Length: 188
Length: 399
Image (cartoon, rainbow over all chains, first blue to last red; front, side):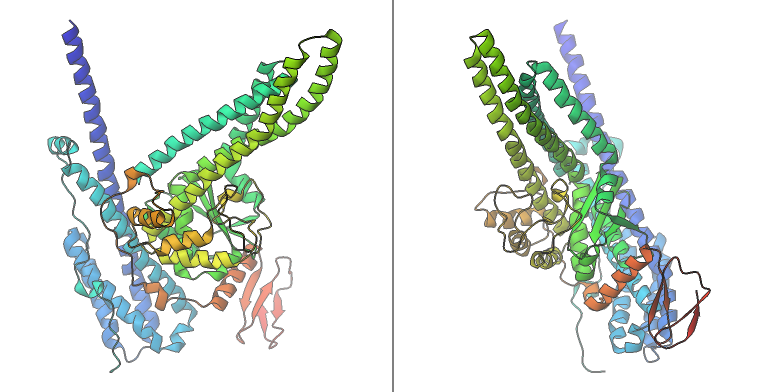
C-alpha cells in the first residue's frame, strides 16, 4: 500500500516538473516571437522613412546621385526579401544600413542641409530607428540564446524534444562592412 | 535577467519581514506607555497598512505631483521620447513608460510606478540640456533598469515602512517620557514594583531611539545595492558603459540641490538630490554610492555583461561582488565602439538648451511662432489679439 502511494507521489512530482519546464519553454518561445515582431516593426519604419529622406536631401545633394541611388536600391531589395528567413533578411538589412551610414556621412559636406528643420527631424528619426533596430536585434538574440539553451540543456531538452520545440535562428550581421570601422578617404 | 528579478523579490520579502519585526517591537513598546501592549501593536499595524495602501495605489502620482513634473508626448520632445523607446526595446519592457519633465535647473532623474506596466520616468530640464544623446541613453537605461528590476516598488514599500517606524518612534518616545512620569507617581503611591517598570521603560526608550536608526541603515544598504545593479543593467542594455559614466561625471560636478525633492523621495533619484560639494558619500548613512566610484567601476568594465561589471566592482571593493551569482552568465558581451549618433545627429549644448526651453514653454501652453528674421515669438495662452507684430523686424503674424 505504501509503495503505491510512493509511486503516485513520484508521478505527481514528475508531472509538476514536466509542466513547469514546458511552461518555461513556451514563455521563452513567445519572447522570441515577440522580439522578432519588434525588429520587424522597426525595419518597416525604416522603409517608410527612406523615401522621405531621399526626397528631402535630393535638392541639396546634386553630386551624390550614386549614394542616393544605392540607398533606394538597398531599401527596395530589403523590402522584397522581408518575408524570407532571418539569415537572408539580416544580409539585405545590413546592406541597407551601410548604404544609409554612407549617406549620413556625406551630409557633413552640406551645411545648408544641416540647417533644414525638416531634415534634422528626419535625421533624429532615422538615427533612432537605427538604434531601435540594433537594440531589438540585441534583445532578439538574447531571447534566442536563452530559448536555445533551454531546448538543448538537460533536463529541459527532454521536454523540448518530446513536445517539438526547435532551436531558433540568430539575427546576425553577416556583412563585413558593418563590422569594420568606417575608413576615411581624403581623395575625391 | 529573470534570476536577478527573482533574487530581488526574495530580498524584498526578507527585508520587509525584518523591518516589519522592528515595527511590531515598536508597537509593543509603545503599548507599554498605555499599559497595554496589544493596543500599541494594533495601532502600529493599522498605520503601516494604511500608508502602504496609499503608497501602492497612489504612490507614483503623489511622487510625480510632489516633484512638480509635466508629462510630455512624442511631439514635445522627439529625442527624449525616442531614447526612452530605444531603452524600452533594449530591456524588453512590454509597455512604454510615461515620460515627465521636472522644470528645474538641477541635474537629476528618477523612475516610479508600482509595476513595469504602470511606470514613469522623470528627468529635470537641466539634465536634459546638459546631456548628449549617448549620455541621455545611459541615464534613461539606468532608470528603465530600476523599473525592469522591480526596484521601484521595493524602494517605495521600504520607505513607507521606514516612515512608519520613524513616526511611531517619535511619538512613542514622547508618550513614554510622559507615561513614565505619571507611571512613577502611580507606583510610588501604591508602593513596590517601580524598579522593574522603570527598567522596562528605559529599555523601551533606548529601543525607540535605536529602531529608526537601524531601519534607516537597512534601507540605505538596500538602496545602494540597487543603484549598483541598475548601473550594471544600464551598461548591458546600452552595450556602452561610457555613456552612463560620462553622464554621471556631469551629474557629479553639479551641486545644485533639487528643490522639489525631500528626504523620503531621495532614494528614487539617480544621484542623491541633497549632496554637498566635496562630500564623500561612502558612509553608511548615504542612499547612493559615491559617484566617483560608480564612474570608476563603469570605466573599468572590459565588456558590457553583468560578469564584467562584477569583475570591475570586485577590483574596487577588494574581492567582494555585487551581482547575484545566479545572474552572471559566462558569455561575453562586447562594448559598442562605433556610435552612429555621436557624429551625425548630435546637437550642441546651445541647441539642446533651446530645444528644452521650447518644450517648457509649450507645456505651459505658450504658442511659438518663428519669424522669417529668425526670432521666436512666445505667445502667452491668454493673448486674445488675432495678429502679433515681431518686435525684432516688425512683420505681422497670424496667431
